[in-house]
Amino acid sequence: MRIAQMVQMQEAMKQHSKGDVSIVRQLLGEEDVKPKKIQREDTYIPMSSRPPEPNWDRVHSKRAPIMSEEEFEQAIIAMARANAEFAMKKGDTSWHLARDQVAYLELHTAFVSVVSPDRRAAFANSGGNNVIHGTVPNHLGGNELMDWSPSGWTTYPTVAEMERGARFNEIYNKAYQEWEAENGTIPHGTTKGLRSFTSTRNWL
Image (cartoon, rainbow, N blue to C red; front, side, top):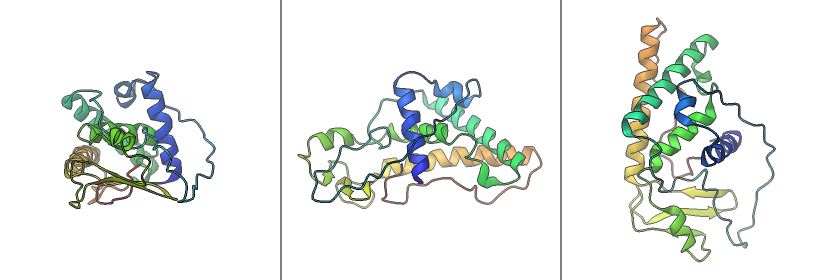
């Protein structure tokens, strides 16, 4: 994940938490989203320092669903089809996320976090440790939820998070490729730009 996308995701989640933006209206094209341009500062912190609190707008942690499962699926499909159309007009599938990266990341995080462990509570109870543990095993079989290094926080997804992330990609890919087929474009074996949950690095 690029730094610019991380910053955009942070801004989008701030808007959502303040009630300034309706994600459903965004995804259905009823509300325009114009991410703010943000200056990035150097965030390097020596290992000898106490780790900073994660930016919870960018870390998967247990959240209540912001919509029903049916609404989630409808929103993912609407986004995929809109991005497919945008990519066709640009003539390059690598453009498909450029239409609205903020809304894509916001929806992806909201969808997966429904099954996430409570990393925020685990951090609060960690006593300032660099490694945060939990009671739910991660996909590697350990009990680490995340850890800190000078390059930032690393999140270790659980099996449930990986499965839900894969479900998001399945819905998105199917809708994206269906739009291509309906509109006479050449179907792509792999839709570019989609993120999967195979890495232990923090997804956002």
